[in-house]
Length: 208
Image (cartoon, rainbow, N blue to C red; front, side, top):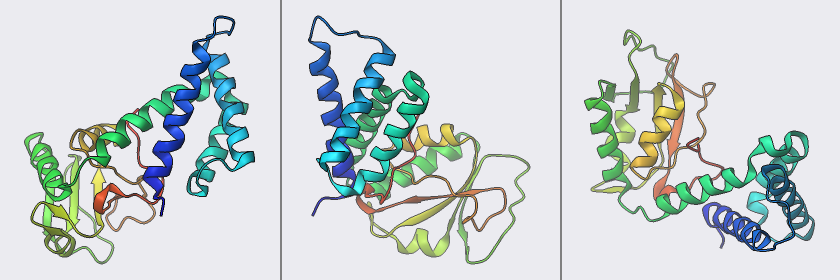
């Protein structure tokens, strides 16, 4: 059965390949606007023909809508390149428990407040004087990692610049869910999920 990551990589690589094939022609306009228009039409046709998994239909629909309303500003070629780079790197990661611990060590070295020994089951407030902070409930940290492997989904409660955090996570081969402030149990923090095998059920947070 096709998984979300696989479906996303397939559409991304197919789109970039189509764009590359187009660029080989001598009589095409090679501007950002022209490339965005080409990809928009290519994606719209792919949707119409149901060429790819329905798992990424929502993303395709959004990209087509963005390109039609924003033109070159939608930056579809760059978006596909970012997805391909980040997802391919993450797909090869098997030891996500070790990757998480390596990321936590780096955050501590960068003066983050990292808390792993607190039970997080109800709304909490963390007083860390504005420092970047990350909290994982002790039940999840102790129970969802087996050796170097991540066995169950873990929620990270994070207060920091989102893109800076995304870059650190990507450096360690971790795909993060989109940050969710509403579902967070810790005030002023966003909740991010990391999943076994990096198999996020929806588009991960991308590094810009």
